[in-house]
Length: 316
Ligand SMILES: [Zn+2]
Image (cartoon, rainbow, N blue to C red; front, top):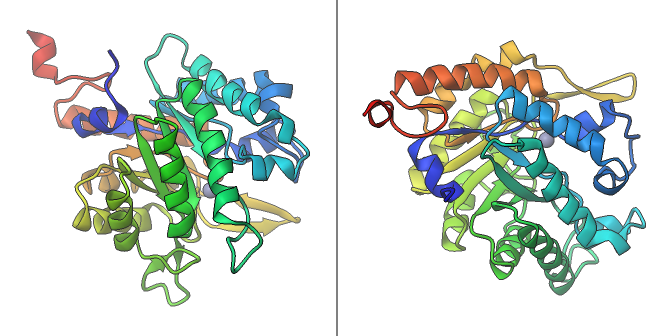
Protein backbone atom coordinates (compact mmCIF):
# COMPACT_ATOMS: atom_id res chain seq x y z
CA UNK A 1 0.00 0.00 0.00
CA UNK A 2 1.11 3.52 -0.72
CA UNK A 3 2.73 5.27 2.23
CA UNK A 4 1.03 8.30 3.73
CA UNK A 5 2.54 11.45 2.24
CA UNK A 6 3.81 12.67 5.63
CA UNK A 7 5.65 9.34 6.12
CA UNK A 8 7.03 9.08 2.56
CA UNK A 9 8.65 12.53 2.76
CA UNK A 10 10.48 11.69 5.96
CA UNK A 11 12.40 9.09 3.93
CA UNK A 12 13.18 11.24 0.91
CA UNK A 13 12.15 14.67 -0.38
CA UNK A 14 9.50 14.75 -3.10
CA UNK A 15 9.00 17.11 -6.00
CA UNK A 16 5.84 19.18 -6.19
CA UNK A 17 4.36 20.79 -9.28
CA UNK A 18 4.42 24.32 -10.68
CA UNK A 19 1.81 26.98 -11.24
CA UNK A 20 -1.71 26.21 -12.40
CA UNK A 21 -3.22 29.70 -12.75
CA UNK A 22 -0.59 31.09 -15.10
CA UNK A 23 -0.68 27.84 -17.13
CA UNK A 24 -4.47 28.07 -17.49
CA UNK A 25 -4.04 31.62 -18.86
CA UNK A 26 -1.57 30.31 -21.43
CA UNK A 27 -4.14 27.63 -22.33
CA UNK A 28 -6.73 30.34 -23.03
CA UNK A 29 -8.42 31.17 -19.73
CA UNK A 30 -9.30 34.84 -19.64
CA UNK A 31 -8.41 36.99 -16.65
CA UNK A 32 -11.29 37.03 -14.17
CA UNK A 33 -12.92 33.87 -15.48
CA UNK A 34 -13.37 30.71 -13.41
CA UNK A 35 -10.39 28.39 -13.91
CA UNK A 36 -11.85 25.74 -11.63
CA UNK A 37 -14.93 25.37 -13.85
CA UNK A 38 -12.54 24.12 -16.53
CA UNK A 39 -12.41 20.83 -14.59
CA UNK A 40 -15.90 20.29 -16.05
CA UNK A 41 -15.87 22.32 -19.27
CA UNK A 42 -12.26 21.80 -20.48
CA UNK A 43 -10.91 18.81 -18.51
CA UNK A 44 -8.51 17.92 -21.36
CA UNK A 45 -6.73 21.27 -21.01
CA UNK A 46 -6.31 20.90 -17.24
CA UNK A 47 -5.13 17.33 -17.77
CA UNK A 48 -2.59 18.43 -20.40
CA UNK A 49 -1.03 20.91 -17.94
CA UNK A 50 -0.82 18.38 -15.13
CA UNK A 51 0.53 15.69 -17.46
CA UNK A 52 3.37 18.03 -18.37
CA UNK A 53 4.20 18.37 -14.67
CA UNK A 54 4.18 14.60 -14.23
CA UNK A 55 6.39 14.20 -17.32
CA UNK A 56 8.74 16.84 -15.87
CA UNK A 57 9.06 14.70 -12.73
CA UNK A 58 6.47 15.89 -10.19
CA UNK A 59 5.71 13.41 -7.42
CA UNK A 60 2.86 15.55 -6.09
CA UNK A 61 0.15 17.32 -8.09
CA UNK A 62 -2.11 19.96 -6.59
CA UNK A 63 -5.70 19.81 -7.85
CA UNK A 64 -7.16 22.66 -9.89
CA UNK A 65 -9.54 23.60 -7.07
CA UNK A 66 -7.87 26.67 -5.51
CA UNK A 67 -11.10 28.67 -5.82
CA UNK A 68 -13.36 25.63 -5.54
CA UNK A 69 -15.18 26.53 -2.32
CA UNK A 70 -18.86 27.46 -2.49
CA UNK A 71 -18.03 31.06 -1.53
CA UNK A 72 -15.56 31.41 -4.42
CA UNK A 73 -17.66 29.54 -6.99
CA UNK A 74 -20.74 31.63 -6.13
CA UNK A 75 -18.85 34.68 -7.42
CA UNK A 76 -18.71 32.94 -10.82
CA UNK A 77 -22.31 31.66 -10.64
CA UNK A 78 -20.93 28.13 -10.35
CA UNK A 79 -22.38 27.35 -6.91
CA UNK A 80 -24.43 24.47 -8.34
CA UNK A 81 -21.24 22.61 -9.22
CA UNK A 82 -19.19 22.65 -6.01
CA UNK A 83 -18.97 18.89 -5.56
CA UNK A 84 -18.49 18.11 -9.28
CA UNK A 85 -15.72 20.71 -9.73
CA UNK A 86 -13.75 19.33 -6.79
CA UNK A 87 -14.37 15.69 -7.63
CA UNK A 88 -13.28 16.26 -11.23
CA UNK A 89 -10.21 18.13 -9.97
CA UNK A 90 -9.03 15.04 -8.08
CA UNK A 91 -9.83 12.69 -10.95
CA UNK A 92 -7.93 14.77 -13.50
CA UNK A 93 -4.85 15.01 -11.25
CA UNK A 94 -4.96 11.24 -10.67
CA UNK A 95 -5.32 10.62 -14.40
CA UNK A 96 -2.28 12.84 -15.04
CA UNK A 97 -0.12 10.37 -13.10
CA UNK A 98 -1.14 7.47 -15.35
CA UNK A 99 0.65 4.37 -14.02
CA UNK A 100 2.94 6.42 -11.78
CA UNK A 101 2.31 6.28 -8.04
CA UNK A 102 1.97 9.96 -7.23
CA UNK A 103 0.29 12.04 -4.56
CA UNK A 104 -2.80 14.08 -5.35
CA UNK A 105 -3.06 17.11 -3.07
CA UNK A 106 -6.60 18.46 -2.86
CA UNK A 107 -6.34 22.22 -2.97
CA UNK A 108 -8.31 24.63 -0.80
CA UNK A 109 -7.41 28.29 -1.37
CA UNK A 110 -8.57 31.31 0.61
CA UNK A 111 -12.33 32.03 0.54
CA UNK A 112 -11.43 35.48 -0.75
CA UNK A 113 -12.93 37.71 1.90
CA UNK A 114 -12.59 38.74 5.52
CA UNK A 115 -14.27 37.28 8.56
CA UNK A 116 -16.46 39.44 10.79
CA UNK A 117 -15.87 41.96 12.34
CA UNK A 118 -13.46 43.00 9.55
CA UNK A 119 -15.57 41.61 6.72
CA UNK A 120 -18.97 40.16 5.89
CA UNK A 121 -18.37 36.44 6.35
CA UNK A 122 -19.25 34.54 9.50
CA UNK A 123 -17.06 31.73 10.74
CA UNK A 124 -19.99 29.34 10.21
CA UNK A 125 -20.24 30.27 6.51
CA UNK A 126 -16.55 29.72 5.90
CA UNK A 127 -16.52 26.50 7.92
CA UNK A 128 -19.45 25.11 5.96
CA UNK A 129 -17.83 26.06 2.61
CA UNK A 130 -14.46 24.52 3.52
CA UNK A 131 -16.08 21.36 4.93
CA UNK A 132 -18.10 20.87 1.77
CA UNK A 133 -15.01 21.30 -0.42
CA UNK A 134 -12.76 19.16 1.77
CA UNK A 135 -15.33 16.36 1.83
CA UNK A 136 -15.67 16.39 -1.98
CA UNK A 137 -11.86 16.25 -2.37
CA UNK A 138 -11.38 13.47 0.20
CA UNK A 139 -14.32 11.43 -1.11
CA UNK A 140 -12.85 11.63 -4.62
CA UNK A 141 -9.61 10.11 -3.32
CA UNK A 142 -7.21 13.00 -2.65
CA UNK A 143 -4.13 11.79 -0.73
CA UNK A 144 -3.90 15.04 1.21
CA UNK A 145 -5.63 18.37 1.67
CA UNK A 146 -3.56 21.52 1.28
CA UNK A 147 -4.98 24.74 2.71
CA UNK A 148 -2.85 27.23 0.87
CA UNK A 149 -1.96 30.87 0.35
CA UNK A 150 -3.19 31.55 3.88
CA UNK A 151 -2.48 34.79 5.69
CA UNK A 152 -4.60 34.51 8.85
CA UNK A 153 -4.49 31.85 11.54
CA UNK A 154 -8.26 32.08 11.98
CA UNK A 155 -8.99 31.05 8.39
CA UNK A 156 -6.19 28.48 8.46
CA UNK A 157 -7.64 26.80 11.55
CA UNK A 158 -11.10 26.62 9.95
CA UNK A 159 -9.46 24.95 6.94
CA UNK A 160 -7.51 22.45 9.05
CA UNK A 161 -10.60 21.55 11.06
CA UNK A 162 -12.66 21.15 7.87
CA UNK A 163 -10.05 18.75 6.50
CA UNK A 164 -10.14 16.79 9.77
CA UNK A 165 -13.93 16.63 9.68
CA UNK A 166 -13.72 15.35 6.10
CA UNK A 167 -11.36 12.58 7.22
CA UNK A 168 -8.22 13.74 5.37
CA UNK A 169 -5.26 11.46 6.13
CA UNK A 170 -2.75 14.22 5.55
CA UNK A 171 -3.29 17.93 6.12
CA UNK A 172 -0.92 20.62 4.85
CA UNK A 173 -1.13 24.25 6.00
CA UNK A 174 0.57 26.66 3.63
CA UNK A 175 1.18 30.33 4.39
CA UNK A 176 1.88 33.20 2.00
CA UNK A 177 4.54 35.56 3.39
CA UNK A 178 5.58 38.98 2.18
CA UNK A 179 9.06 40.37 2.68
CA UNK A 180 8.87 43.53 4.81
CA UNK A 181 9.68 46.91 3.21
CA UNK A 182 13.10 47.12 4.89
CA UNK A 183 13.85 43.59 3.73
CA UNK A 184 14.78 42.41 7.22
CA UNK A 185 12.14 39.70 7.62
CA UNK A 186 8.86 38.35 6.25
CA UNK A 187 5.37 37.82 7.61
CA UNK A 188 1.88 37.31 6.23
CA UNK A 189 -0.39 40.21 5.29
CA UNK A 190 -2.08 39.68 8.66
CA UNK A 191 1.25 39.94 10.47
CA UNK A 192 1.92 36.24 11.17
CA UNK A 193 5.58 35.18 11.50
CA UNK A 194 6.66 31.72 10.31
CA UNK A 195 7.48 30.45 13.82
CA UNK A 196 4.01 31.32 15.07
CA UNK A 197 2.39 29.72 12.00
CA UNK A 198 4.37 26.48 12.40
CA UNK A 199 3.59 26.19 16.12
CA UNK A 200 -0.06 26.93 15.44
CA UNK A 201 -0.28 24.29 12.69
CA UNK A 202 1.35 21.65 14.84
CA UNK A 203 -0.99 22.44 17.77
CA UNK A 204 -3.98 22.18 15.44
CA UNK A 205 -3.03 18.81 13.98
CA UNK A 206 -1.55 19.63 10.56
CA UNK A 207 0.91 17.02 9.27
CA UNK A 208 3.04 19.24 7.04
CA UNK A 209 3.88 22.95 7.42
CA UNK A 210 4.28 24.83 4.17
CA UNK A 211 4.65 28.14 2.44
CA UNK A 212 3.73 29.20 -1.06
CA UNK A 213 3.39 32.34 -3.15
CA UNK A 214 3.84 35.61 -1.28
CA UNK A 215 5.79 38.69 -2.30
CA UNK A 216 9.56 38.73 -2.53
CA UNK A 217 9.69 35.14 -1.24
CA UNK A 218 12.17 33.71 -3.72
CA UNK A 219 14.18 30.55 -3.21
CA UNK A 220 16.64 32.07 -0.73
CA UNK A 221 13.84 33.51 1.39
CA UNK A 222 12.08 30.16 1.18
CA UNK A 223 15.20 28.53 2.62
CA UNK A 224 15.14 31.02 5.52
CA UNK A 225 11.49 30.10 6.08
CA UNK A 226 12.38 26.38 6.15
CA UNK A 227 15.07 27.10 8.75
CA UNK A 228 12.66 29.14 10.86
CA UNK A 229 10.00 26.41 10.64
CA UNK A 230 12.49 23.70 11.56
CA UNK A 231 13.57 25.62 14.65
CA UNK A 232 10.11 25.29 16.19
CA UNK A 233 8.61 22.11 14.73
CA UNK A 234 9.65 18.59 13.82
CA UNK A 235 6.91 18.35 11.19
CA UNK A 236 8.00 18.01 7.55
CA UNK A 237 8.13 21.19 5.49
CA UNK A 238 6.85 21.98 1.99
CA UNK A 239 7.83 25.04 -0.07
CA UNK A 240 6.39 26.35 -3.36
CA UNK A 241 7.90 29.79 -4.10
CA UNK A 242 6.89 31.98 -7.03
CA UNK A 243 9.17 32.29 -10.05
CA UNK A 244 10.46 35.68 -8.90
CA UNK A 245 8.67 38.93 -8.15
CA UNK A 246 5.50 39.81 -10.06
CA UNK A 247 6.02 42.69 -12.50
CA UNK A 248 3.36 44.52 -14.46
CA UNK A 249 4.18 44.57 -18.18
CA UNK A 250 1.56 45.82 -20.67
CA UNK A 251 -1.10 45.43 -17.97
CA UNK A 252 -0.15 41.80 -17.50
CA UNK A 253 1.41 40.30 -14.40
CA UNK A 254 4.66 38.61 -15.38
CA UNK A 255 6.92 36.34 -13.33
CA UNK A 256 10.23 36.10 -15.09
CA UNK A 257 12.64 34.04 -13.02
CA UNK A 258 13.97 31.41 -15.41
CA UNK A 259 14.37 27.73 -14.50
CA UNK A 260 18.15 28.31 -14.39
CA UNK A 261 17.81 31.24 -11.98
CA UNK A 262 15.39 29.41 -9.73
CA UNK A 263 17.17 26.07 -9.66
CA UNK A 264 20.52 27.47 -8.54
CA UNK A 265 19.10 27.93 -5.04
CA UNK A 266 17.43 24.52 -4.87
CA UNK A 267 20.30 22.56 -3.36
CA UNK A 268 20.59 24.88 -0.32
CA UNK A 269 16.83 24.53 0.11
CA UNK A 270 17.11 20.72 0.11
CA UNK A 271 20.09 20.86 2.44
CA UNK A 272 18.03 23.05 4.80
CA UNK A 273 15.65 20.10 5.05
CA UNK A 274 12.76 20.97 2.72
CA UNK A 275 10.69 17.79 2.30
CA UNK A 276 8.56 18.84 -0.69
CA UNK A 277 9.68 21.51 -3.15
CA UNK A 278 7.70 22.90 -6.05
CA UNK A 279 6.79 26.26 -7.53
CA UNK A 280 3.91 28.72 -7.30
CA UNK A 281 2.95 31.60 -9.62
CA UNK A 282 4.92 31.80 -12.85
CA UNK A 283 6.68 28.44 -12.50
CA UNK A 284 6.32 26.08 -15.46
CA UNK A 285 7.00 22.44 -16.38
CA UNK A 286 10.48 23.63 -17.45
CA UNK A 287 11.16 24.89 -13.92
CA UNK A 288 10.01 21.55 -12.51
CA UNK A 289 12.18 19.62 -14.99
CA UNK A 290 15.22 21.62 -13.84
CA UNK A 291 14.26 20.93 -10.21
CA UNK A 292 14.01 17.19 -10.97
CA UNK A 293 17.57 17.02 -12.22
CA UNK A 294 19.00 18.74 -9.13
CA UNK A 295 16.79 16.72 -6.82
CA UNK A 296 17.89 13.43 -8.42
CA UNK A 297 21.53 14.44 -7.98
CA UNK A 298 20.79 15.33 -4.35
CA UNK A 299 19.09 11.95 -3.79
CA UNK A 300 21.94 10.13 -5.46
CA UNK A 301 24.47 11.92 -3.25
CA UNK A 302 22.51 10.65 -0.24
CA UNK A 303 22.25 7.12 -1.62
CA UNK A 304 18.47 7.30 -2.05
CA UNK A 305 16.62 6.07 -5.13
CA UNK A 306 14.38 8.74 -6.61
CA UNK A 307 11.54 6.23 -6.86
CA UNK A 308 11.80 5.25 -3.20
CA UNK A 309 13.85 3.04 -0.93
CA UNK A 310 17.51 3.02 -0.05
CA UNK A 311 19.96 2.05 -2.78
CA UNK A 312 21.56 -0.56 -0.49
CA UNK A 313 18.28 -2.41 0.05
CA UNK A 314 17.58 -2.35 -3.70
CA UNK A 315 20.86 -4.12 -4.35
CA UNK A 316 20.07 -7.05 -2.05
ZN1 LIG B 1 1.52 32.01 -6.22
